[in-house]
Length: 197
Image (tube, rainbow, N blue to C red):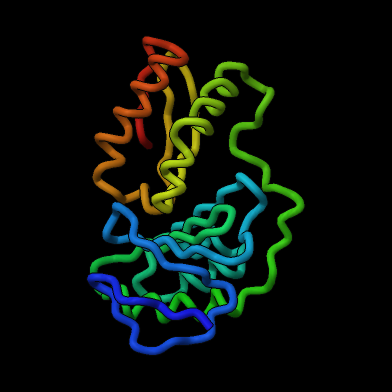
């Protein structure tokens, strides 16, 4: 048995059997919650981000979650799922709804990771950037229910896309982006500019 405890804006009175859900955590983004699972949902280090039913068509759990009214995006990585909602529903109501497909989901095979957007070994600059992001940035973002995808690097401009809780968080557009740029300027290229797309 797993009991959801009281948070400032979430009170669940009853204890329910939730074999796959270990915990539910706040994120810095009030529109997102991080659902920590007992089992992995993706291969180690692989992240999956879905913002509409068309993107989620090949992933039954993401499709089921996005079919729930007011769910705006789903981000999955290792042992957590981040749900982002609109402002039309309260978290206590929505968390009860999203728990149903999570508990009913079939086990996920984690042996074969999905092909990343940018493959390691093809570009030494991107490999170095990703190494720095893996060591210094991504663990903190994952701790807050988010992630960061490198989209491109050209003419000293790195384009990144925030995922999960970071995708619609105001601090990711300003403070976090500046921090990423500062770290990459110190450790990779003093002329790099980082933009969010």
